Image (cartoon, rainbow, N blue to C red; front, side, top):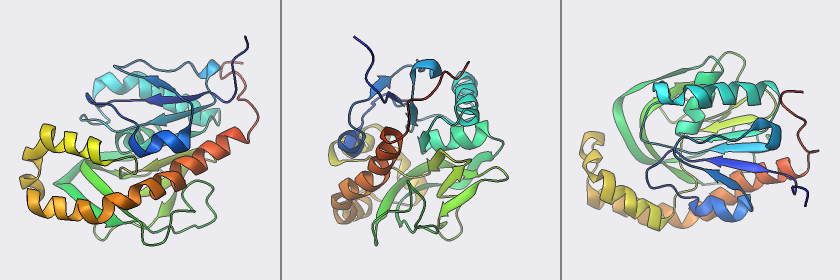
Length: 234
Protein backbone atom coordinates (compact mmCIF):
# COMPACT_ATOMS: atom_id res chain seq x y z
CA UNK A 1 0.00 0.00 0.00
CA UNK A 2 1.47 3.43 -0.90
CA UNK A 3 2.48 5.81 1.87
CA UNK A 4 -0.17 8.37 2.81
CA UNK A 5 0.83 12.01 2.41
CA UNK A 6 1.92 14.13 4.09
CA UNK A 7 4.55 12.48 6.27
CA UNK A 8 5.30 14.60 9.35
CA UNK A 9 8.33 13.51 11.38
CA UNK A 10 8.62 14.45 15.07
CA UNK A 11 12.07 14.35 16.67
CA UNK A 12 12.20 13.98 20.46
CA UNK A 13 15.19 14.79 22.68
CA UNK A 14 13.83 14.51 26.22
CA UNK A 15 14.30 11.44 28.39
CA UNK A 16 10.57 11.79 29.09
CA UNK A 17 9.29 12.54 25.54
CA UNK A 18 5.74 13.71 24.96
CA UNK A 19 3.52 15.42 22.39
CA UNK A 20 1.17 16.99 24.94
CA UNK A 21 -1.04 19.68 23.47
CA UNK A 22 0.67 19.31 20.09
CA UNK A 23 -0.77 15.84 19.49
CA UNK A 24 -4.27 16.84 18.39
CA UNK A 25 -3.38 19.71 16.02
CA UNK A 26 -0.48 17.81 14.42
CA UNK A 27 -2.54 14.70 13.79
CA UNK A 28 -0.80 11.57 12.50
CA UNK A 29 2.99 11.78 12.81
CA UNK A 30 6.00 9.47 12.90
CA UNK A 31 8.05 9.91 16.09
CA UNK A 32 11.82 9.49 16.41
CA UNK A 33 13.59 8.83 19.71
CA UNK A 34 17.10 8.31 21.12
CA UNK A 35 18.99 10.01 18.30
CA UNK A 36 17.07 8.39 15.44
CA UNK A 37 16.38 10.78 12.54
CA UNK A 38 13.97 10.75 9.61
CA UNK A 39 15.00 10.22 6.00
CA UNK A 40 14.35 13.42 4.07
CA UNK A 41 13.47 11.39 0.98
CA UNK A 42 10.41 10.03 2.78
CA UNK A 43 9.53 13.08 4.91
CA UNK A 44 7.30 16.04 4.07
CA UNK A 45 7.84 18.08 7.27
CA UNK A 46 9.75 17.97 10.56
CA UNK A 47 8.93 19.09 14.09
CA UNK A 48 11.89 19.06 16.51
CA UNK A 49 11.11 19.35 20.22
CA UNK A 50 13.06 20.38 23.32
CA UNK A 51 15.69 18.59 25.34
CA UNK A 52 18.07 18.76 28.28
CA UNK A 53 21.26 19.40 26.30
CA UNK A 54 22.61 22.34 24.28
CA UNK A 55 22.55 22.78 20.52
CA UNK A 56 26.33 22.66 20.24
CA UNK A 57 26.57 19.22 21.85
CA UNK A 58 28.42 16.89 19.43
CA UNK A 59 25.61 14.35 19.51
CA UNK A 60 23.42 16.80 17.58
CA UNK A 61 25.79 17.14 14.60
CA UNK A 62 23.74 14.70 12.46
CA UNK A 63 20.50 16.52 13.27
CA UNK A 64 22.06 19.92 12.56
CA UNK A 65 23.13 18.62 9.15
CA UNK A 66 19.64 17.21 8.56
CA UNK A 67 18.03 20.54 9.45
CA UNK A 68 20.42 22.45 7.18
CA UNK A 69 19.49 20.16 4.30
CA UNK A 70 15.76 20.40 5.07
CA UNK A 71 15.90 24.20 5.01
CA UNK A 72 17.86 24.15 1.74
CA UNK A 73 15.22 21.91 0.13
CA UNK A 74 12.29 23.87 1.66
CA UNK A 75 10.98 20.93 3.65
CA UNK A 76 8.78 22.61 6.31
CA UNK A 77 10.44 22.64 9.72
CA UNK A 78 9.21 23.74 13.15
CA UNK A 79 11.65 23.82 16.06
CA UNK A 80 10.53 24.12 19.68
CA UNK A 81 13.05 25.29 22.32
CA UNK A 82 16.08 23.05 21.64
CA UNK A 83 14.62 22.40 18.19
CA UNK A 84 14.61 26.16 17.52
CA UNK A 85 18.17 26.43 18.82
CA UNK A 86 19.27 23.61 16.50
CA UNK A 87 17.61 25.43 13.58
CA UNK A 88 19.43 28.67 14.38
CA UNK A 89 22.73 26.82 14.88
CA UNK A 90 22.31 24.96 11.59
CA UNK A 91 21.72 28.15 9.64
CA UNK A 92 24.48 30.34 11.05
CA UNK A 93 22.78 31.88 14.09
CA UNK A 94 24.14 32.05 17.62
CA UNK A 95 23.05 29.87 20.52
CA UNK A 96 24.63 30.81 23.85
CA UNK A 97 24.14 30.40 27.58
CA UNK A 98 21.75 32.90 29.20
CA UNK A 99 23.13 34.99 32.08
CA UNK A 100 20.57 33.26 34.29
CA UNK A 101 18.38 30.21 33.80
CA UNK A 102 14.91 31.26 32.62
CA UNK A 103 11.79 29.59 33.98
CA UNK A 104 8.78 31.82 33.46
CA UNK A 105 5.51 32.41 31.64
CA UNK A 106 5.79 35.32 29.21
CA UNK A 107 3.30 37.03 26.89
CA UNK A 108 3.55 36.01 23.24
CA UNK A 109 2.93 38.82 20.75
CA UNK A 110 3.16 38.41 16.94
CA UNK A 111 5.00 41.14 15.04
CA UNK A 112 3.67 39.79 11.74
CA UNK A 113 0.07 38.62 11.91
CA UNK A 114 0.28 37.45 8.29
CA UNK A 115 2.92 34.82 9.03
CA UNK A 116 1.32 31.47 8.11
CA UNK A 117 2.46 29.64 11.27
CA UNK A 118 3.10 32.15 14.05
CA UNK A 119 0.82 34.97 12.94
CA UNK A 120 -2.42 33.52 14.32
CA UNK A 121 -1.38 33.25 17.98
CA UNK A 122 -4.41 34.27 20.05
CA UNK A 123 -4.41 37.68 21.76
CA UNK A 124 -3.25 37.58 25.36
CA UNK A 125 -1.42 34.27 24.93
CA UNK A 126 1.31 33.35 27.42
CA UNK A 127 3.83 30.55 27.01
CA UNK A 128 6.20 28.68 29.27
CA UNK A 129 9.95 29.23 29.01
CA UNK A 130 12.21 26.67 30.63
CA UNK A 131 15.54 27.66 29.11
CA UNK A 132 19.23 27.67 29.86
CA UNK A 133 20.29 28.91 26.41
CA UNK A 134 19.08 31.69 24.13
CA UNK A 135 19.03 32.40 20.39
CA UNK A 136 20.24 35.15 18.10
CA UNK A 137 18.86 34.19 14.68
CA UNK A 138 21.14 34.15 11.62
CA UNK A 139 21.35 37.06 9.16
CA UNK A 140 18.29 37.12 6.93
CA UNK A 141 15.99 35.48 9.47
CA UNK A 142 12.73 37.26 10.24
CA UNK A 143 11.65 37.64 13.85
CA UNK A 144 7.92 36.97 13.96
CA UNK A 145 7.35 37.33 17.72
CA UNK A 146 8.24 40.21 19.97
CA UNK A 147 11.18 39.57 22.27
CA UNK A 148 10.46 39.61 25.99
CA UNK A 149 12.15 42.60 27.58
CA UNK A 150 15.89 42.02 27.86
CA UNK A 151 15.69 38.56 26.30
CA UNK A 152 16.83 36.76 23.16
CA UNK A 153 14.76 35.84 20.13
CA UNK A 154 11.30 34.43 20.87
CA UNK A 155 10.05 33.26 17.48
CA UNK A 156 11.54 33.52 14.00
CA UNK A 157 11.40 32.25 10.43
CA UNK A 158 14.34 31.25 8.26
CA UNK A 159 13.69 31.20 4.54
CA UNK A 160 10.13 30.43 3.52
CA UNK A 161 9.33 27.32 5.53
CA UNK A 162 11.41 26.99 8.69
CA UNK A 163 10.24 28.34 12.06
CA UNK A 164 11.59 28.30 15.58
CA UNK A 165 10.00 29.19 18.93
CA UNK A 166 11.89 29.44 22.21
CA UNK A 167 8.96 28.40 24.43
CA UNK A 168 6.85 25.28 25.02
CA UNK A 169 3.31 25.56 23.62
CA UNK A 170 3.03 21.75 23.77
CA UNK A 171 3.27 21.61 27.56
CA UNK A 172 0.33 20.11 29.45
CA UNK A 173 -0.32 19.45 33.13
CA UNK A 174 0.93 15.86 33.18
CA UNK A 175 4.16 16.69 31.37
CA UNK A 176 4.84 19.73 33.51
CA UNK A 177 4.38 17.66 36.67
CA UNK A 178 7.10 15.40 35.30
CA UNK A 179 9.42 18.38 34.81
CA UNK A 180 8.98 19.44 38.43
CA UNK A 181 9.70 15.90 39.58
CA UNK A 182 12.80 15.61 37.36
CA UNK A 183 14.19 19.15 37.46
CA UNK A 184 12.59 20.89 40.42
CA UNK A 185 16.03 21.91 41.67
CA UNK A 186 16.34 24.28 38.68
CA UNK A 187 13.69 26.64 40.07
CA UNK A 188 15.99 28.23 42.64
CA UNK A 189 18.76 29.19 40.14
CA UNK A 190 16.01 30.78 38.04
CA UNK A 191 14.85 32.83 41.01
CA UNK A 192 11.57 30.93 41.37
CA UNK A 193 9.81 29.10 44.16
CA UNK A 194 7.61 26.07 43.67
CA UNK A 195 4.62 27.97 45.06
CA UNK A 196 5.14 30.96 42.77
CA UNK A 197 5.76 28.78 39.71
CA UNK A 198 2.69 26.67 40.41
CA UNK A 199 0.53 29.76 40.82
CA UNK A 200 1.62 30.97 37.37
CA UNK A 201 1.00 27.49 35.94
CA UNK A 202 -2.57 27.53 37.24
CA UNK A 203 -3.19 30.85 35.44
CA UNK A 204 -1.68 29.94 32.08
CA UNK A 205 -1.86 26.17 31.53
CA UNK A 206 -5.55 26.31 30.54
CA UNK A 207 -4.60 28.47 27.54
CA UNK A 208 -1.97 26.13 26.13
CA UNK A 209 -4.31 23.96 24.10
CA UNK A 210 -5.41 27.05 22.16
CA UNK A 211 -1.81 28.18 21.71
CA UNK A 212 -0.83 24.74 20.41
CA UNK A 213 -3.80 24.68 18.07
CA UNK A 214 -2.72 28.05 16.68
CA UNK A 215 0.93 27.09 16.11
CA UNK A 216 0.99 23.33 15.43
CA UNK A 217 -2.38 23.44 13.72
CA UNK A 218 -1.21 26.19 11.36
CA UNK A 219 1.98 24.27 10.64
CA UNK A 220 0.06 21.06 9.91
CA UNK A 221 -2.37 22.87 7.60
CA UNK A 222 0.51 24.43 5.71
CA UNK A 223 2.10 21.01 5.25
CA UNK A 224 -1.13 19.31 4.22
CA UNK A 225 -2.00 21.91 1.60
CA UNK A 226 1.39 21.61 -0.13
CA UNK A 227 2.29 19.03 -2.77
CA UNK A 228 4.24 16.05 -1.44
CA UNK A 229 7.91 16.91 -0.95
CA UNK A 230 10.24 15.79 -3.76
CA UNK A 231 13.28 13.71 -2.91
CA UNK A 232 15.85 15.82 -1.06
CA UNK A 233 18.55 13.98 -2.99
CA UNK A 234 16.99 14.20 -6.42
